[in-house]
Length: 594
Ligand code: AGP
Image 1 (cartoon, rainbow, N blue to C red):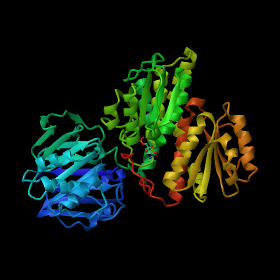
Image 2 (cartoon, protein in one colour):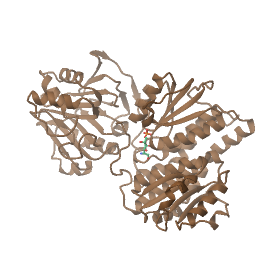
Image 3 (cartoon, protein in one colour):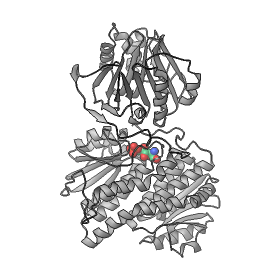
Image 4 (cartoon, helix red, strand yellow):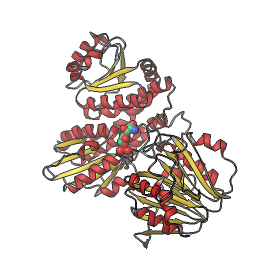
């Protein structure tokens, strides 16, 4: 949830680290800080964004440094809780991502030994432990300190008497960028795109000593060699490309993402779908595990897999699966996570693995933690997503489900051909939604004037109602709830009135008549209704206040088209309200704590 960066080399560390941290700010942005080895150890931190901190940094010639952008877990966002944390003498600085679960016991022990603590964080035990074990060799002191620690961590450490940077990981990602006479450290690849495309991903238990010229990685005291990878993400695809917000840019990238994913897997010669993963269709069932927006993708995936592949599918919130749930029969458990770092999802997949399930991940990030748990991984091709709200990564997950279902299809040749054709048409249909951006902006502006809104749908539109509500809640701070339309009258109806609008997702499928009845019931309670309906639907306008027409799409594939419209709706509502769209309050891009 936090972002970590580090530098050792021949250049001035400060501008490099500031730039790297700006690239990582979407990971968490409560506060930030930097430490350099220049004239001794210098630490700067505050409850500000990195751009603000940069303005007050004095010139610093240090060529070694570490930096951090925080999403608070232990202790509120404050200057004293911000990283880096230092030891009693102010000689050691540490930045940390993860949670030290035994920090209270460690802290009590260290206090009894004379150490003074200032923050409420779990992290602060680290510099004190390292101080306790330091005998002139920083690597050894860090190794010894980490032996006392339980929990998860990615850490970076510097000491005023040493020109090296020590880093270590356990269940929290960390990678090293390689340069000529310089090395970079980061918790996430986007931090490095301006400096290096040669990277080494650290494994759990790795401890690394970094100098400008050299790199030594050890695991359990033994030196190891980790493979060098080429970083596919570039400065171009982690920039805003002229858009006002990353979110808007990422919404607009969706036709290209879909085209690439479909083009790579669906044969144009004969109708067939070929994937890099192998799925054994003799399993008794599939278990989908995910959180947040990825969970809604899984809800769509459930219907798609059941209908196309004719396999029984169960969907579980990953954060709930860990509690007394079990599996029956031979099950394939699939974790869906754009970041691959969501702690609840990873824990749930581990549990499924321990229960004897075969395992797979659907993720957007290569070498992310989930890919180390799963036996095989299906990589979506969304590219870097910087806006905190999931947009293109969500539609890429939907496409992954269509492709997986079609690779296991139990449908006749005509239906199969029709479905692959529908997939190929999706990029142009999504483009048509994007082309109606101005109209959607008007609806978004209108919604921005309300404090609460319901989103309703039935069948395959129901998960989209949930997703639409999450999106507007997350970025526009409008209270929103998604409902299966039939459920409104079982309680939520009590809230309906003139000042409580409803967004109704009305596909012309077998849910249409029931949706019309629900809409009439809602209108009888005077709530304004905006219907997202298929082009050519003449009927719907008679019953609602506003209609947003969407390209006609086969029912199973409609969630892609609907989701893009809902993303734009939320985006423009948020813009009208002046919200910080890419970095909504209290949130972070990946949720690495349970
Ligand atoms: C979506 O807009 C959210 N930012 C959030 O719900 C997200 O989908 C959830 O935290 C799961 O993340 P993951 O896909 O990286 O596992």
